[in-house]
Length: 299
Ligand code: HEC
Image (cartoon, rainbow, N blue to C red; front, top):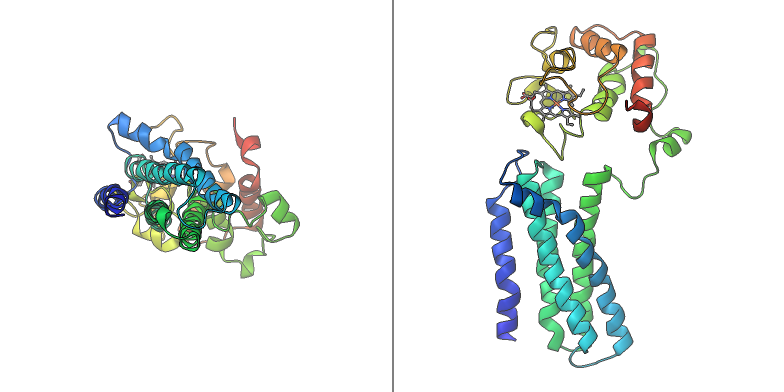
């Protein structure tokens, strides 16, 4: 039991220290090898995800009351090593490939915890079956939590219990019709949806390019490494306007990826910065371009 425990704990303690040391801060960095090993997180994570679920299945199937049978032992070992590997790649992925934010932190630590729990399920293989099943259940629970938080990072909040935009729009849950100018909150109903669709993927909770988040008005005012992105009444200081009105071939033009904003979207930004209400037709045209499905939007 003792050497087993040590064998299970040591790599995971190193993993936790590594996670503390290599903080995800949104910067993309080298060396290339570590960045690539990080990318393998997306592949490696399927190993523990699948195997941790299968271990209790064989446990029930094989019915060894005292020490676990050979299949359970092997699967448990591979899933513990797999959980460690996936978390290790994950720590590198977050640190070297430009991730940051609360969601990333939660996912990272849930992943490290899952690796501990998967190792724990391996440590207790000599124990009675009830204890083994409890340990396996705990590992599955923690792994599922980590997977869920990770899924939300990739597919937005609420995933997987959220239909796609077109399906939800049919239920009128997403993007309510534009309200007439008089009672509309221009930030919440026009500006935020545009930012959400075109900017937040690189300037939000998962990635914080240029140290700039664009998922709230406070964040825009706070700005990034080059200063505030929104300054009331000042188009020249407001980087969300500056960066989208440069020549599209300019290195600093935003968004760096995907289509440039439409004329109406830029106009909506300008009016909002100037503190003027956005007329209904501009708001509608700006949002219509935002709502267009991504593929149709691409050149
Ligand atoms: C595909 C990723 C991506 C998308 C989408 C994107 N950006 Fe950026 N953005 C970057 C990167 C990378 C930087 C950092 C390099 C730079 O400053 O040009 C950056 C930097 C910025 C900065 C400067 C931040 C600072 O203070 O350094 C602003 C302002 C900005 N983006 C605005 C926008 C706006 C507005 C949109 C949406 C219309 C947008 N970005 C969409 C990748 C993106």
